[in-house]
Length: 425
Image 1: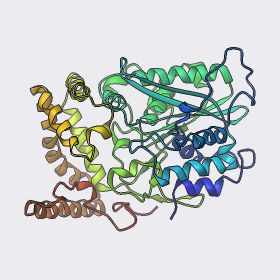
Image 2: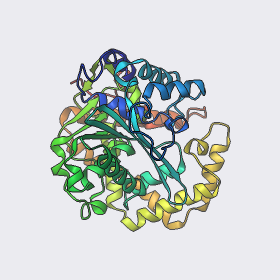
Image 3: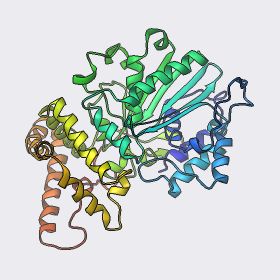
Image 4: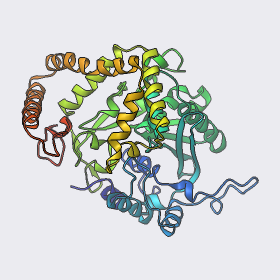
C-alpha cells in the first residue's frame, strides 16, 4: 500500500486540462503548502506584468530549492526525511502539479503579534485557483496560536481571510480553499467570514484533520453559520484523529483515511494510505482517539475562556522566557529537553497548574461516558484498549528500563500498518 507520493505519480501524468480537479488533489496541494517556497519565491515587483513569464511554476521553485540543497517540508519533524523529499521530487516531476503556477505566496512569523501564517495560491485553470493554508510549523509562536483558538480570534485567522479577499479581488473567477491542521481551521474561518461578494467566488472548502471553531468564541461574530457551508465542504481525517477532533466541525462529507502510522503520528498527510490513485478509506475512527477528544472536550467545558487564556499565556510565556523558539528544541534528545520542561513548570502560576491538573480528572469521567456512548463493537475495542493500557502500565511499574515512559497512544494496533483498530470502508 502506497502513500500520497504514489497518488502524485499515478495521477501526475495528466494535467488538469485532461483530468479535472478532484477531491484528492486537495490533499496534495495542502501538503505542497509546507514546501519552503519563501526561500526562492520572487519578491513582488511594482508594475511587473501579470503573465506566465513573471510568475514561477512549482517545478521551477523546487528546482531552485534543490540547487540550494534545501528540499524539505516545514512540518513539525523538520520535513527532511526521505518520505518528504520523495514527495517534493514527485510533485516537481509530475505534469499535473509541477507545471502549476504559484500566482501568490505569503509567509509571516511575527513574535510581537504572536502569529505564524503562510499560504499558497495555485492556479488550476485560468478561472480557478486553489488557496492552500499551511498548518502549524515547529515554532513556539505557531503552537501558541493553536491553543489560542480556544479563547479568541487569532491574527492568522484575520490575515488568512484578508489574504483571500485580496486574491479574489485581484484574480476573480472561482476559488477553492483548503488546509491541513491549523490550515484547515483557517480555511473554515475564511469560508464563514468572507463578505458576501467574495463568498460568491467560493466553490469548495477542504479541511484536512484541522480543528473546528469554538462556538463560545466564534458563533456570535462569524458572518454565516456552519450549516451554510456544510454542503460545499469536504473533511478528511485519519482513523486516529485528535487534532481534527478539537471543536469538531460538523461536516457531513467526512472521510476517514487509513494510515501507516500509529497514534497521533497519523496527523501526517504522508502517512495516509493510497493504492495508486485510489484512497484507502476506513469506516470508523479509533476508539482511543474518540476517548481523547471526549476527554479534551470535557476538560474545556470545565475551564472558562478566561482560564484558557491565562493557561496559554502563562505556559508559552514561560517557554519563551527560557529561550525556546521551537517545539523540537524543548523536547530535544540531547538531555536538555527535560531540563527545559522542568524549568518551565517551575515558573507556572498556581492557577495554571490547577487548570492543567483538572485534565486527568476529566479523563476519569470521560472513560465511563465513552463506554456508555459507543456501540457494542466499539465498546469491545475500547475495553480491549483499556486492558492493554493497564497491562502495559503494570509492566512498567516493575521495570526501570528506558521504555518506562511509553505512551498509551501506541498501545493498541490492529496490525494493519498502524490503523489502530478501525474497520475498512
